[in-house]
Image (tube, rainbow, N blue to C red; front, side, top):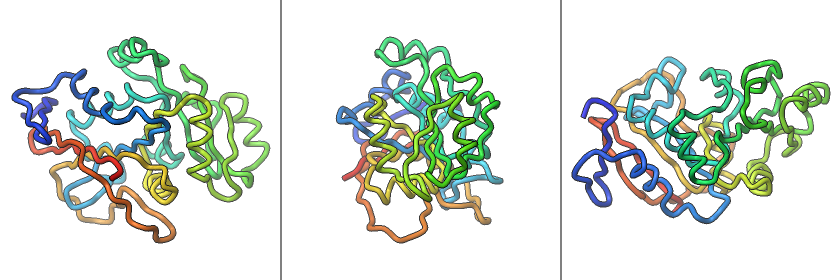
Length: 251
């Protein structure tokens, strides 16, 4: 399997490649209780979260296929502002097939884009806001500049969640109260670390890229202070060539 063909090898092997609906069903299993916080990352086999500074360097066709399906299933895509800038995010839109699937499932055609930024280093004139099919949300702190908050409030809903850093628990509560309980986080490492520390994390979807990176690449999660380890349970293992696509849920 050298293309985006994906098969399941755990818990029950599939005899042939899975269709998009079958993959979506696997990632929907057990997520009925809301809010549900899912994080999606790719990593090399030696633990690097990026290749030359970008996660896209580790991705392949199978990873991109699952990436699109996970966006199909959520109410909101949550991303740290640093990742938004580094990875070149634009307006939050899904592809045509995902749009049709979302509408059929009773969801909005496109997920809401929620950005986490303590400093509010965001441009209200960027396509992220100006071309957004759904009004974005920006989570920030009370120490962010009032004039910047006011400017962003013209193009997004600005929510204050903490004094000097965005508090993950408050953020998840606000999203749930807005009816955005299927929360899909695409990074970065600091936001992932905050979700782990807060106890809000329910699921990690991890693509293991068959590469050795070495160098100084970061891990998929980081944090300023130590936290208690969180036990996770392997829900399924998918494979595409030498790429593994793992789904872990909180034990």
